[in-house]
Amino acid sequence: MLKSEKENGEQTQEGITLSNGQTAQDYVNSLPEKHREVATESILECLRLGYPLNNLEITRIGRAINRKRLGIK
Image: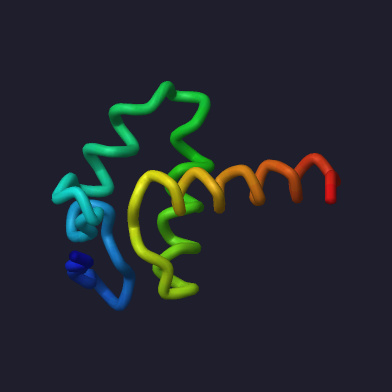
């Protein structure tokens, strides 16, 4: 389940828990460095949209972010 803490009105990765119980910080750190920025953006986008924080949704949003950056529809 989603748990988050706010620090000065901002959510911190340490306070975000994915549906599997792993923290967002641990999840992002487990990825290769080249994927960490997109993964962080994906997690924040999932939170914004109210999507579940699981690997499937994070990956799906990350692919959409990459397609948008590359100009692919």
